[in-house]
Structures are given as structure tokens and as C-alpha cells.
Image (cartoon, rainbow, N blue to C red; front, side):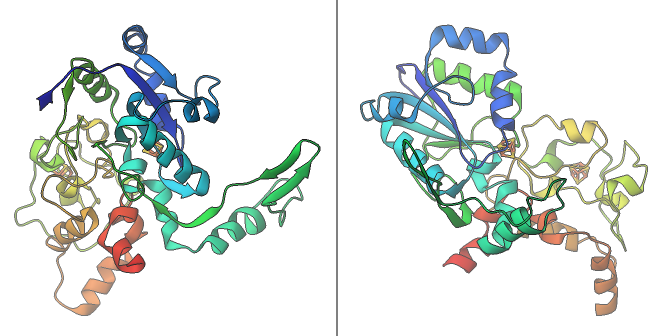
Length: 325
Ligand code: SF4
Ligand code: SF4
């Protein structure tokens, strides 16, 4: 890490986001109060009444670090990403959605019209509003209200603006966030493009479960609610999909300690370009099949393959590049 002093003005913003990343920041609790004494939080619309005009009025580069969570789904998301990029020295892709598209990126399997049809026309509703779509433009006494444009896919932050570094996780683990904040306050700036608040290995490298994968062969996949998993044994050896072989370590394995398989939210480890392809390769290596029918039989027991292998990273995957090249 290079070291330099920071002028501590920071911003937090959410784009196509569930709000979980913002909750992580508030979970810093007293640590955040200490951070609040050490920095100026100049923009955080989730928590305080900041206006976009506050950001527009800032000088270019006035914000030292902007922590940006959420993917880029709409013209408003894109506008704010570009505005905050212009006003910030360092832009941090905070959380899986900004890093790799996250769960919202799975919507890239569908075209915009299909999504709007499902949300506004065919979803079950308690009232009779089915079929009512938001109007892109509405005239009110004060003038015209215009909704953001709904883009044809979810992009990552780095597919939209230059990103200094990445904090993975859905959401990032609180302790890791605290560590990153402390490092930045000490003027320790990561190398450009670094993945911070995480390690470089895979979860399998740090998981203490009995691997049992050497020679393990599975003929069918099971879902966590269908079996009582042995808490000492590798999930994959029990036929439960675990994303550990293709996922960056650093979260502390809270899911695995809670007897639930890793879902993959920390993204690919160092040296892996496509997390889904890596996981598919690891799973394929332990399927016990002889014939094409056996392969089909095993795959028939896997629910939602794309959502399993590319749960958090479809927007940033090789598949996405092929589709939108
Ligand atoms: S990374 Fe996870 S917690 Fe953060 S905004 Fe996306 S879905 Fe929510
Ligand atoms: S696949 Fe999951 S349970 Fe098995 S060793 Fe890797 S992280 Fe642990």
C-alpha cells in the first residue's frame, strides 16, 4: 500500500441497491460515531437530508472518498455515479452490487419489458392496481416530473466510471468495513484496482470442515432445507452446492459456521476471471456420471443453475460480455 494523508471528506451513495450496504455502515455503531468525529460526511442521502444540488455545488475532487453501493440500472444511477466520480478523488465500489452487479444483475436474464410486465401487470396484488405502470412524465403545478430511464441491463460501477478499489460482500462484513475505514483514515491508500476488506484466497482454503472432496462423488444435488447437514463435513461432499471453491475469503465464514453453504457474495478470488465458470468447473469435477443421461439426471436436481453459479456476478461475467459485446 502506498501511504499519503487524506483530507477526510467522505460520501456514501446507493444506486440499484437493497439498502443492506447502508445498514452495514450504520452497524458500525460507536465506531461510526468516532469516524464521524474524524471526517466530514458530506453526502449520505440514505441517512440525512442531502440534496443532489449539494453535490453539484462541490468542486471537482472535493470529496476524498465516495463509497458507492448498488449497481447501475437507471439513468439516475448513471448520472449520480458520473457526478460523484467527478466530485471525488477516490471511488470505492462498495458491496457486491457495485462490484459485480449483485442480485439485481440477475435481472439481466430478462429484457426490460418482461421485467416491467412482471412487476406492474402480472404480480399478485392485494388491490386492483395490476396493469398500472408509472408514467415517465407527469405534469404538476410546479412543472414536469420525469422518472429516470429504466436501462436494458444492470451494469457494475466499473462499467460506468473509473473505480479506485473494490469492497466485496453482500453486504461487506462490518469488521472488514471498520478495518478499511481505519486504514484510510491513517492515509493507507490501496493500490489502484485492489480488492479491499477481503483476502485473496478462496473460502475453501480457510474453511475447517472435513473436505472429503478427494474421491467424493455426488449423483444429485440437494437444497439446504431438504437435508440436515452434518456441521463438520464439507457441504459439497454432502451434495449441497457451496460456492466456497470459487469465492474470495475474508468474510469470516458466518454462513458456514451457521451450517449454511457459502453463496458466493465476495466474488472471485485473485486470479479467477469468471466466478460462475470456476464454480461450475469445481462442481462438474465431483459429479458421478457415466452417460449423458446421468448428466441430465444430475442437472435436473439443480434448481436455478444461473442463479446458483452467477448469483452475484452475472453483470460482470463472461456471459454478460458475450451478450453485450
Ligand atoms: S451488495 Fe447486497 S446488501 Fe449491498 S446493496 Fe447489494 S444486495 Fe444489498
Ligand atoms: S465447499 Fe464450502 S464447505 Fe466445502 S470446504 Fe469449501 S467452503 Fe468449506
